[in-house]
Structure formats: C-alpha cells, structure tokens
Length: 195
Image (cartoon, rainbow, N blue to C red; front, side, top):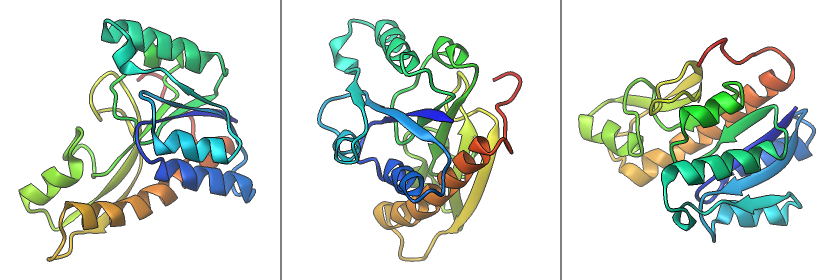
C-alpha cells in the first residue's frame, strides 16, 4: 500500500508511522510527505528519514481552489492508495477527496462527532467533559464529519490543561493511526462506498 502523508506541524503522528514501517510492523510505502507551508518539522523529520517531501504553500496561491487543485495534482503524482491527513490543518475540497476515491484518512483529537474543528482538545476542556479521546476517520467534504474508522477514549484528569491533555491524546492517536493503516494494508478495512 502506497500512502502520501500531509502534515502542517511537527509530524509526531507521522513519526509513529515512519517508525512502524521501518520496524516492519506496517506493510506500506510512504511515497511522499507533503506540507501546506515551509519550515514544518514534519518535513524535516521526513527528510531525515530519507523520504521524498514536497510543499504546496497555501499562501502562494490567489485562491483556496487554486491551492487545492495544485495540492491534488502533487499528491496524485505519487499514485497513492491512501492519503493520510496527519495534523494537516487545511480543509481540502470535495473535489480533492473525490479524486482519491474517498481514500483520505484523517486523525482528530476528540471523540467525534463531539468537538470537531481545529480546537477539539480546548473545546472538550471548556465543556467540562470527563472523557475525551481521539478518532481516525474517512474525511468527507465536511469538517470532521466523515465515517468513523476507529476511536479510543482518554480520561480527562482534574489538573489537565490543554497541553497536558493533548499530549496524552497524541500517544493514543499515534497507536490508533498505525493500527488503522496496518488494517488497511492487510485488506481488513476498505474505504466507504461513498464519502
């Protein structure tokens, strides 16, 4: 299974995938890692691991549609079986998702459908939940609304702040993403018929 991974930040989920692939725990090839801006540590990690990287800088395009089309073209050039959004903080269009046959996997630091969007951890804390967690799902044209593949709960501790809770969620999220990719590579999971 060939994957392209998209990142916007440090790439800690990506590192878990790189490590699992190198250890032989994942039967997949990371064809490339892409980012939406220059200078991300996720790209640096990928280069250090000997992976091909690319940047389609969001700020270099006059419109979101132009950026989205350029990103889709670049990702398609690697002929991925699955595209993985791993901390990729840009919403892609329905056209992008359709171009890859709905094979676009996203991670989210909350138990969807609760607390979608860019601030899932902060929103969960503000709401006062005692349990949150993480979700791996098939992305669709909405914001964190696609079919859920896997979820795992994480308890909110009394002294948690956004950073401490998010760090505990990331540990679970990394494991969950690797497990989902392993199951996809083994043919145990398939994309939904329509996304």
